[in-house]
Amino acid sequence: MRVARAGLTADRLTRAAAELADEVGFENVTVSALARRFGVKDASLYSHVSSARELRTRVALLALAELADEVAAALAGRAGRDALVAFADAYRDYARAHPGRYAAARLPLDPADLAASASARHSEMTRAVLRGYRLTGDAQTDAVRLLHSAFHGYVSLEASGGFGHQPRTAEESWSGVLDALDAALRNWPSPGGVREA
Amino acid sequence: MRVARAGLTADRLTRAAAELADEVGFENVTVSALARRFGVKDASLYSHVSSARELRTRVALLALAELADEVAAALAGRAGRDALVAFADAYRDYARAHPGRYAAARLPLDPADLAASASARHSEMTRAVLRGYRLTGDAQTDAVRLLHSAFHGYVSLEASGGFGHQPRTAEESWSGVLDALDAALRNWPSPGGVREA
DNA sequence: CCAGTTGCCTAGGAGGTCTAGGCAAGGTTA
DNA sequence: TAACCTTGCCTAGACCTCCTAGGCAACTGG
Image (cartoon, rainbow over all chains, first blue to last red; front, side):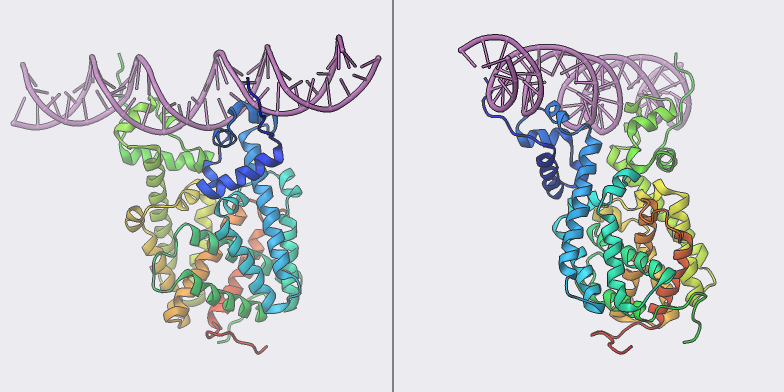
């Protein structure tokens, strides 16, 4: 009786799950919901992905790769402060355009998936940005971590409404924060702290 | 036949759910799991909390209040850089000691719950820290947001293994990051950017 | 001491995850 | 062309979580 097949593949499922995540939130990405979207029974998906967990992991890996691509494109041909701002804006723009995917990118991955992910590219690109600031060794590592933390923290708080409806918009603060980070990178303190005013 | 009652109340359920969150992860805090822990049927919990959602919200509010208490205690009698480090350490220590509660604190709350939460205290305390740095107006707001972002981002990346097993530990980088934030607060750039070296 | 309230119960439906096994369409090989 | 095998989706069903409705028994207070 059944005529047309839906034409499912692991890749199509992953992409559809990513769209679903952006529409209804990553936590609502479910095997049943995805099957419904394709007009098939949920058991049918298990030939392509082995579990709901694997489906979500695939979305996470897709998001990490997409994000790395966006950032890489934004970074091309820029250096110093321009590179910092381009990186930051690309990062934040991706998170706002694709909230579900971005949430997926924060899924804790087991080491095997992590190694296969684009997260190494993220660190590399952050280090590339820092080449404009003459930071090396431990200071560079710490700066990479500060930038990751600040970017991720900012978009994550912004997404969860942490900045409220105050007069100063999240948009305005963003450039202030980037200015401060740029200044921090240019004046990176030597270990032990700098005590003078 | 049943003799002893479990003695459930909304408060006991909330505290037990918080412990459960720290043990098995916030995403696994479930009405059934909690009922199992008390040796009662899951339906019994619905006299005390109206839904799984409410249970999780209660844990979130508990965590926000506890975190505010810890930070307030750490902040007492300190100013300037000492206050910054005390705030940051209290924040990070809480997140590491209570990963499930901390995850709960990041649950998106609806405005009503948010207003009743301790998150206003968080902003207030951050502003208190900044009094040692002579920041006012928009710069102060931006600095509050940078600190929140950096702290939250750092502990969140640390918790999800984002810092890998690199030679430089998360512990070591933390003090480097705090030094940099301290420097950024002391040298907060004026709007428009500072271009000199 | 009896009435009302409270605390936990049983029963059951809806929806999500996942396994086992089946059948039929399409491509492969003789 | 026929037999075969693989692939794609199916049904059936077990198990879990969430939540509602309704019930009984044990406390509590007038």
